Amino acid sequence: VSLMAAGNLPDRGEHERTVRAAIDWLVDHCDETGYFTTDGDTISKMHGHGYALLALTQACGMYGEDGEGRQRLRAAIDRGVRLIESTQGETGGWSYEPRKSPDHEGSVTVCMIQALRTARDAGFAVDKRVIERAVAYMKRSQDPASGAFRYRINDPKTSWALTAAALSTLNALGDYGSELVTHGFESLEE
Image (cartoon, rainbow, N blue to C red; front, side, top):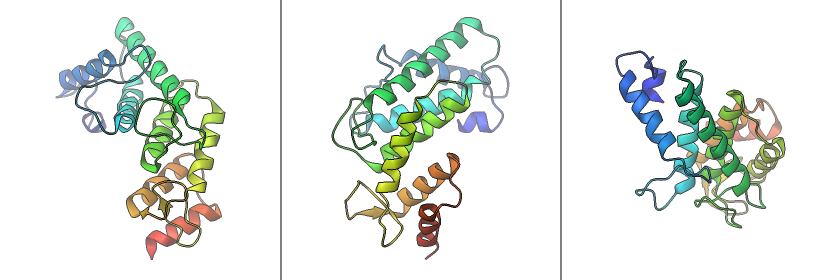
């Protein structure tokens, strides 16, 4: 994504071959379930999945006219979105593994929301109820006393990095001035 942000696209720029190779590698590592696989990711698989999907959705609009490559890219993104939708837990959040789980964690949930948002912005169908449940999760994860966001719902542990990520994610979804967001920004300022 950083190479693309610097103007390198899959078909132009100083690093076009590197960008194309990275996109192709991610597409090649999207299995039939939609999970972006790698042997090296054994702890926080869904973080990697979210970042891979985010990168591919950013590349989608820049892929050029390559019909077969573009179709493979779009199919991988669509499968990746479906995996995220199907692995959302009952709390509205996600956990580390690419499967539905009663466990949940705030930073993984932020990654999934961001990936789904960029997929929607790139023209992919995203189940609105999944987003609504994820936003509700984020709202329940805020500590009402401090305004900071918790690692998990009802967990006393908060994180300034997670608070910033949650606020950025809520802003990206269009929430700029709710009481929840205002309280979160006030906690960061303090």
